Length: 276
Image (cartoon, rainbow, N blue to C red; front, side, top):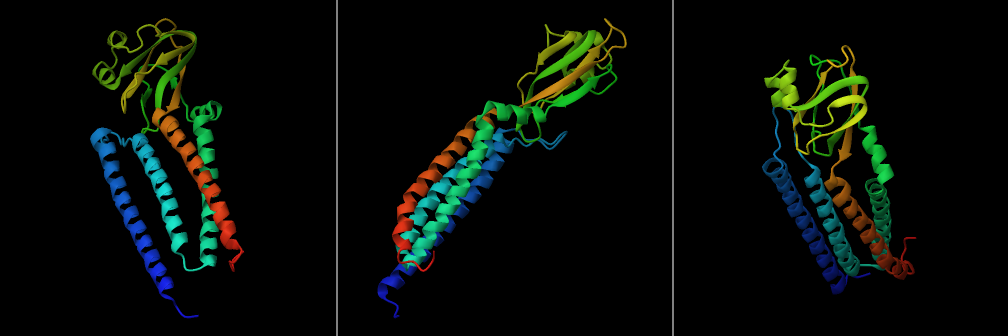
């Protein structure tokens, strides 16, 4: 069969569309790397010393948003590719593969949306990351950072349990290092002014700050020799559970809408396609 001018023209247009698509993706990848640096080091206050801290929660939201934009862009480019494909078989195969890919993306993002949006599921994940420490005197290390290395989770409250009356003070690292061994100074500089007397289980709120080291200091003068147990309750970043959850739902909606659009296209070209 001789090659017609229309076939050659469509082939050239298809090649141009794919080149434009690749160039656009490269530009967006460079933009993504630049945003990672800005949000982690310039805005987020990332540090390498004394401890590694690279906040990626906000950046992760931007990544997901950019991926959603790229996903929608790919719909537009696929429409052009189907339009300028050289045969009905090629158009049918493009539509069929796009439907499969869209359904797979909808399923994966749907599962992630459920995890981030359903409180019971999210709570179970957060609970699995809780840490238990034992307080057995001021000479024992009982410290923690308010956020994890990448800013995904934070510790907003601590559950302290003791079977007899003891005092527990929440203090910043600078106070702890400056007044090590001075229980009176720990009492004066404590961050839990009211609920420092522990007899049973008490909840201590932790200030909402990024990458800050805190210490739990036990004063067993009311009950000498009695210790306490602390449960550090982690909470997933609101940026991750909120914004990323909404974006995952948007992924599901966009890909299902794309499938609905492609189904009649796929049926139209399947009649004369050599692929089944």
